[in-house]
Image (cartoon, rainbow, N blue to C red; front, side, top):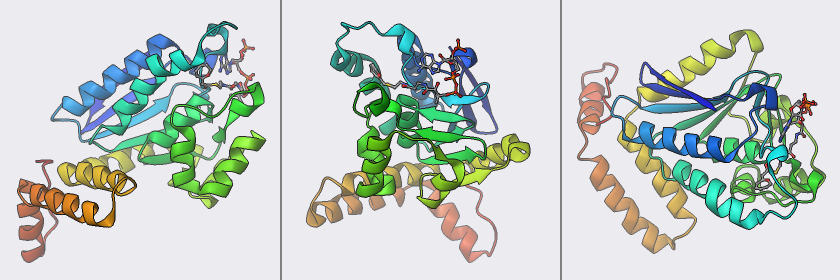
Length: 254
Ligand code: LHQ
């Protein structure tokens, strides 16, 4: 239900149920988790792209696969929670290549990524309220951090489509890309990130997240430990050498 390949330091994870607009099944959740785990452990991978096959990014839970009596809490604990944690704990940069509509938990998946590159024909839809549910899979947690409390509430309560242009205006889209440039720009963006100091990127992600849960005093202690670790990397030595020699740094991700 997904495709996986690695090229030029970038792992491409493509959701592959185009006739269902890449709706999630249990199987797909598990395959995504596995692919993120493999990417996280593979030295040659220094950036990850999650995108969708066909005209959609992901339409959320496959609604033909949920029974009326199903315990949705259990479904979240078993399928979606572990997938979202796997993404959150991944120290490598993850880019959502939002090629088309991202709805429900598909929207949540895009929110959990570090960047959202958005096709001009794509849209976001916090569809949950339209079927009587609450945004799940970390949706409110991430959405409020990205667009602020009021906008997160508005999008969640109204359940209306957000266009690519509006997504850019409210800080939801990192960048909007024209349909003709889509592949080339997505690839170039990911390869640029893949050539950055990968360990430092992982630490930046970790400490930004930690900042929400710590007092300033605790945070400063943690930060000092993070910088100690960054200071031991080959990429730090290369960064300073390149600056001194007035040349472009060649980072290796170690
Ligand atoms: C679909 C789906 C879909 C199945 C389109 N499932 N077939 C977690 C835990 C447990 C339970 C509940 O949920 C969750 C998390 C969630 O994600 S809940 C939210 C689930 N998602 C939605 O409510 C979104 C439902 N889909 C839509 O609103 C629309 O399809 C969007 C806005 C995504 C796209 O609209 P259109 O571009 O107009 O396409 P369409 O509606 O015509 O869909 C095309 C086909 O894809 C169609 O099938 P058909 O056989 O008629 O061609 C749809 O039935 C199918 N499809 N989403 N989630």
